[in-house]
Length: 348
Image (cartoon, rainbow, N blue to C red; front, top):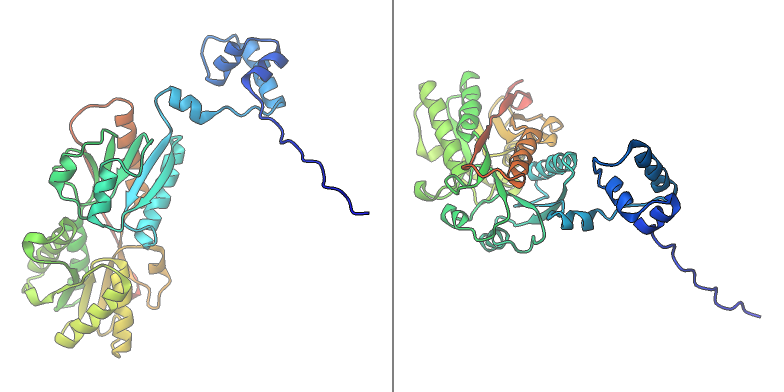
């Protein structure tokens, strides 16, 4: 005879404040005061309530409590691409920094798309958050400055100067100068910048600043600036670094060094150079920017300018925490500099 259906089992009901109060023989208000760390509770009473909280495995409804206090504990992070090594490492650093402040990070990927950045700036789809950490790429500064959503925000990156928002930026002029100076001091004389974008008037700030640093290092090394060595790429990605390096070397076989806009571009470029039969660094030296983890494990390993993602995350979350605590001063700017890490791609 087949067995009948097993009786359904009702899940255990979560322990409530009332349960703890009844077990401890105190009022619900007393338990609430202990849970919320109210100062005016006698030590012996506090210990008694805590004992029953642990015994009954009571879990406070943190979200409900935060909402009553006007906070959710949630912070939105909107950035271009979480699959990029640089942005992935930055996201990890921000998650750690948020956790240390009792915050939970919600991630929204914009792909650098203007309309999606506008949605984020307008408060959608990151509703019900206390604050926003935003890495914009394309949204005009004027639009950022006129953002209607009142959620406190902090920007990360070179974009957003004059927006009125606190910002953690990168000294990209110094990055360009550092990378190209290293190449010049290594004896390189025809140094290309792989990763230009658009014309002078339309270059994103990060590109303009790195080119400014590139040119200043050339001047100091008494090397002539050649606009033809500013090689454009549609995006700073592996395949574009690969395609761009092949086109660059076909047009300018005299190039003996490449300052790549970022590490992904550098990786693609080195792959192209190997296919062309050129040795790195003997024939062409390569420097990248970001110092992502893969830079230490390539063949050859990549000389790169390291950016401290943990520092950037701590600074950004610190600025945001100040705003959430009621700071109403003018916009603040904190700048992170880079550090040259010399490896095999330049002979290190």
